[in-house]
Length: 220
Image 1 (cartoon, rainbow, N blue to C red):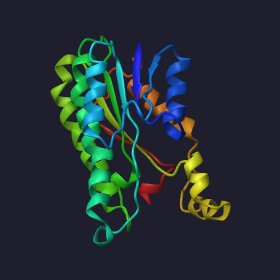
Image 2 (cartoon, rainbow, N blue to C red; image 1 turned 180 degrees about the horizontal axis):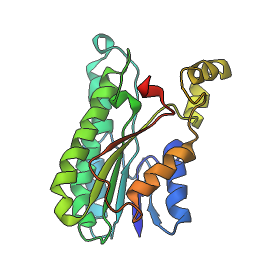
Image 3 (spheres, helix red, strand yellow; image 1 turned 135 degrees about the vertical axis):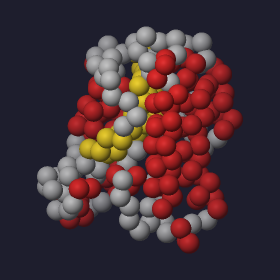
Image 4 (cartoon, rainbow, N blue to C red; image 1 turned 90 degrees about the vertical axis):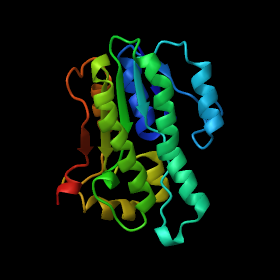
């Protein structure tokens, strides 16, 4: 069994890679130099170079989150956000679906966000991209059903990753956690456990779903 995971060098992606590796999957985790999601040429080259390699699961995890109000966003901000978080994942899926159709257990998991369920100031571009990604999930769940390929979106809430710790002080993290009903951020491995289930042979019937894992944040 082989799984392609983008953005697997840290955070949720790294934890997800560990889950699949520990359960016997072979990992396909391209570096930035091998797959630059801000470059259509890079994505197309990567697809071409790997088109004959067997593949069972695709995890679209890599992304960026530039926080800016829409009226302050530059054209470059808009292009980069939508390219990395939406356009390139779509290209990657288009290019890997032929590989998945040859698998006896084809699975796709797109990593969305709670900001595809609710939103807030500064998240307009990110929310647009992640909502678009789930639109792809919905359509592909139908298009690929006859090939028994299951497609889902996981929407993580606040997660205590290296980036979260880098971008926030301990006091700021504490303030965020007070807004979460369970009183704490998720651990990366808690998100990874769900991603693994949906992207593995253990999932046999769930498809086309947007599954939120946020400690109750979005139901307030």
